Image (cartoon, rainbow, N blue to C red; front, side):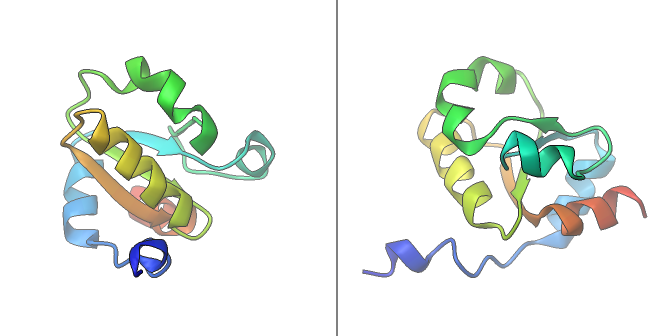
Length: 105
């Protein structure tokens, strides 16, 4: 019953997130290309949520993966998809503004 709400209120672990970003994490914006083009995080790539399952090769051999979106909901789903495909090193960064703030510190 609570599964649908699990990604709604994302508590981001900014300490873990900051460490991953400082360690050159693979930054992935899972919003639409239109949202991405309106502004994102420096160095991030755009792999929309619906494309994540077909783009798994882009995530291989990355030490840390940080996924983010507008609210943290789609990135939570992307994290679930990646983890169900064997990726252990995925962090839901929450909003792109949150990740951007840490990148620019």
